Image (cartoon, rainbow, N blue to C red; front, side, top):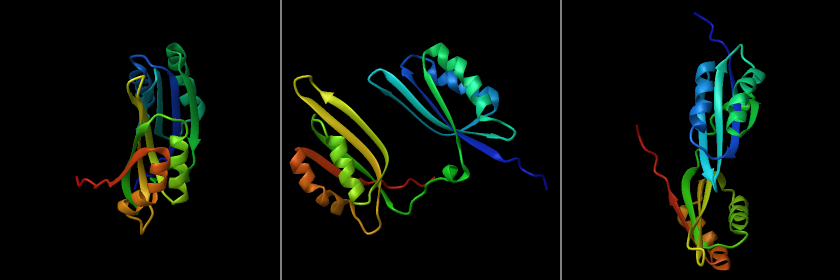
Amino acid sequence: MTHQPETLHYAVSVVGKDRTGIVAGIAEVLFRLGCNIADSSCSMLAGEFAMILIVSHPRPFSKSKLHDELKPVCDNMGMSLAVRTLHVDEVARQETSDEICIISVYGADQPGIVYRVTRELAALGVNIMDLNTKLIGTPEEPVYVMMLEAAIPEGQTPEGLEALLGDLKKELNVEIGVRIVTPVAF
């Protein structure tokens, strides 16, 4: 039986002004180094592009090697770079037995929507796994849209959670909807 080398994991963050080729440039370096991209999230926000990657590589390998190879590509594109070594307990998939739901919030743009909704969800024991916001509508009538993917604690229902958010919905004058995400079988 052959011994499998230990796998190292890193979180790589790249942020800067959006331009064509950022993902390809970073992916090329990772491919050349023999890294595997386990998880990734990339997004453009108001002309800024941000990507977070969880990459793995078998030993021997180092954080400094990864950083030194990515840095020239990032510098050339005007992007900032951060690389962090992940410990074994940070690499384990964060599976949950809780129901996964999508929470949508729509309403007139105003300061405090993200803070107030997320504070209320935290108080109810809801774990936010993903959050996206967008400003839509017109400059005269901007509409704020927030979409959250979240884990509802055991015993909670989407309808119950929506009802518990009722006072906040009235106070902020926003629409809040909660629906379960049905897992897809492969």
